[in-house]
Amino acid sequence: MLFRRVPEGKVVKDRVHLDVRVGTGLVGEERLAALQAECARLVALGAVHVRTLLADEENESCILMRDIEGNEFCLD
Image 1 (cartoon, rainbow, N blue to C red):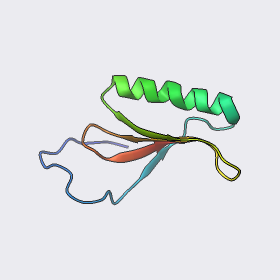
Image 2 (image 1 turned 60 degrees about the horizontal axis):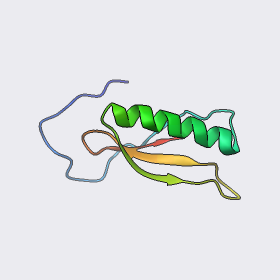
Image 3 (image 1 turned 90 degrees about the vertical axis):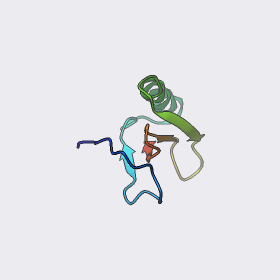
Image 4 (image 1 turned 45 degrees about the vertical axis):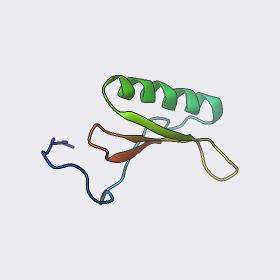
């Protein structure tokens, strides 16, 4: 996959939403730690942490982020 910088700013909702698989096979605190580590790595590269969605009875934890142009993606 290739990301290209464009001169225009974001003006509408993203047409594509990416889920980046980080915690495959992990659950609970171990999964959350892996997601947080990847989040910290991406923030150091310019991404923005939007919010962390903690696990509940139906879903595992994930982290919503934005790239440097405002496009949203999840660490899953």
